[in-house]
Image (cartoon, rainbow, N blue to C red; front, side, top):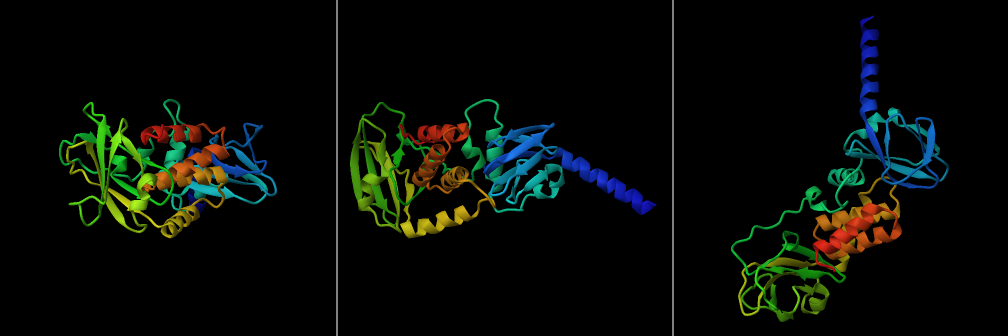
Length: 299
């Protein structure tokens, strides 16, 4: 009798916990649909549903679901899946997708105000350097360290003075006494990395500074020029960390987020742009692309 009593309590606890789970459709392919409160609707990325919902997956279709802002799981076989039976899949650690990214996507897809994608940094591991003094120009902490392999991308800065000309200098990583490249920037506060890649060697690291023309700066920022081969290894590793199923648009967006977090800014931009192109109706992807361009002076 005691065992039966414990079994009933355990079953009741399981039902209660399952009912508390919240779900969101992260990515899908095919004619996936959701039945909730006896109403069947087509699947939509970002759609939130309760534990009482049933997800219908036809042959050849698949869907990946976020649970409780933390975990992901996938249905890839044809069938009807009552979500209240998959509470165990809500445990963090069932897949290798970054927990920060999963929390970020949930927060942005359910955001009721503000611009989606504008607070990416709050979910990233990026930490900027502390300024050592009072420089005549200010560089966003996002640019303290840049990993770069290919593509057009601007290094930008701001000035507290009404200056029209700025010195940009590039140094070898082991020698900051003499720049290997210097140029004067007129009427703007940025320079495209691609414009001086011929002064660098892939696989090497460099320092750079920006200052008002004629003035010195000791605010050395780091630029790692990564070989295309090494970047390909990193790129493939990040791709492999996706969910069991991930549509091309969702993969591109996740790659953009993770590459930005890893300071591969030019490459992150390419993936954010790809995501917005693949799914032009997704407000988060469009908004993030616009926010990224604003953050990094890509106007």
